Length: 365
Ligand SMILES: Nc1ncnc2c1ncn2[C@@H]1O[C@H](COP(=O)(O)OP(=O)(O)OP(=O)(O)O)[C@@H](O)[C@H]1O
Image 1 (cartoon, rainbow, N blue to C red):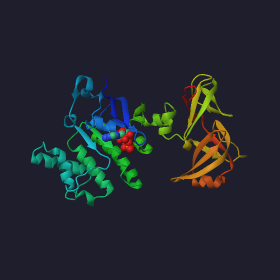
Image 2 (tube, rainbow, N blue to C red):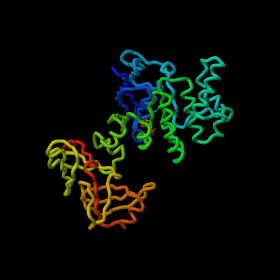
Image 3 (spheres, protein in one colour):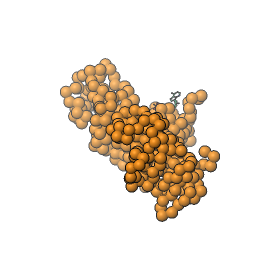
Image 4 (cartoon, helix red, strand yellow):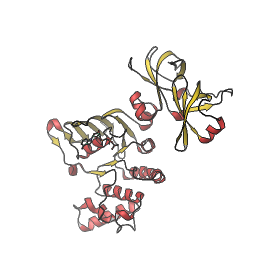
């Protein structure tokens, strides 16, 4: 049987929240699990429970062949004995300790010479040479992040837990360190669990992703799969699929399905049987805009709409259309100018069949 991590916990914060999380996935040397979801969805509680810092009332946590928690059998292995490297959200470096002192913190069990050797090794691995005598406040955000990671990794943990590892950094540093973190995690050959609510971070770092909302795990899969094929409308909403509208399967033939959405029809690559109630999910960046009157592109779906709103979305612009159903579109500023769009403009939206994702819907939802 393949090695796996299996988490099945129930934790209540009376009057505040109930977390019921079930995640089970195969784990290899450097498998990264992403816990993804909005603020308050329970990601940190799951992470802290795995670390042994939070104690669920009920449940089991198994790491490869070891049971860390089994409330029914009275098993609750201490955080130290789980051998976990934990990096908290704001790093929690000891301000009065030097970089070397911070890294040496978890190495008290080693002899003085072994501790020195390990600190030097880790300083080199994390490219912190020359900074060993410096205090955390004298470091840049990126350096602090590396020290926090180095401190978590120094005692050679068997699992690394990172809570929003890049969220304290400014955007350019975050993008640079995202790539570095990915290669470092692979190099360390250490399985890890990373909490994030950042989509790009999840895609860049994760091998497996658990999408959480309201204390529950809604879907587990590769990040790409969960983002492009959310299992239901709730997942679609939390992974940021801008358009989620009700529809019904009108026709299914030749591996294409036609979905009725209000007055419009859309073609998708696959979907449930004829007559089924569905949600149609479309990512804003998968929609192209075309001028009315120009030749349509090869995309399967072309729907006419009216621009209702235009809003800045970082380097891009979000255009909200009324196509008989609301459709969100992300375009570049130059595309917007070329199309000469403003609120009230008619426009045509082009969407490939593969970008129309259909998920089953309970009748009445
Ligand atoms: N110690 C606590 N006491 C009371 N309620 C708590 C405690 N820890 C967490 N909660 C509640 O549990 C829910 C989940 O919190 P948690 O921190 O796990 O979410 P999260 O997804 O990590 O959020 P964020 O992204 O904001 O850190 C929230 O409603 C929170 O208020």
